Image (cartoon, rainbow, N blue to C red; front, top):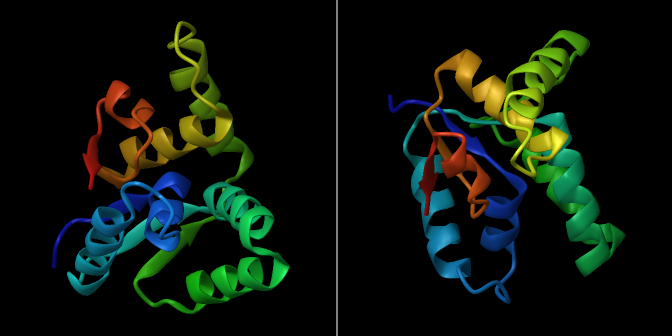
Length: 137
């Protein structure tokens, strides 16, 4: 089984939308990762962010279909963010990297990845590379 890969909203949106410039690469990467046997990890914050953006772009029905797919996919693991994880993310990523424009959602993603030893993210967000993680596609 391959190591876990984190899925960010930018990776999901690129895989979902044929209008995205890196759609083909993102979709191929998602399918390859999903078929690879290892878990795809994300947070409920990322799911909420992706749902909001996808619903705005495609309508509430498509947003609901996205949620249904995520929650029914046995490869997808959604970690629910608690107060401790959020506090560690704020201290380690937002306070320590004040010169960066990391969002709270990204900081929580980085902290979860650090905590779980996840080195790779399906993302187009270069902040993941700035934080020291590998990016796919």
